[in-house]
Image (cartoon, helix red, strand yellow):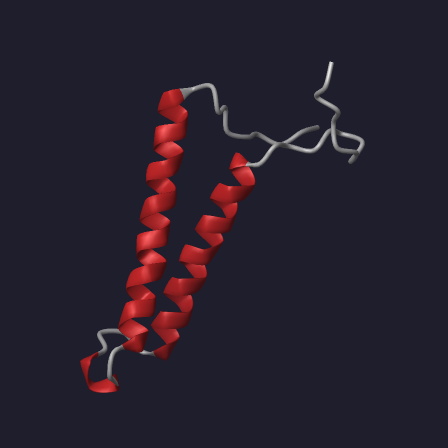
Length: 82
């Protein structure tokens, strides 16, 4: 059984996917920027940095996996040439 994947021919789906990817990237960026501030100016501590960055990273990887071409059931890449 193949996994669901992004339909690149559907502009609404692609737009939603890009919007979600942007939100996840912004989350990771905000955590990183906070982490790079001087310690007395940080809003988050090390535990929240790790948790929030880990969650954003997982969302980004999931979005990228969803957008990638699914593998055929036998695990071999499909030959799309006709």
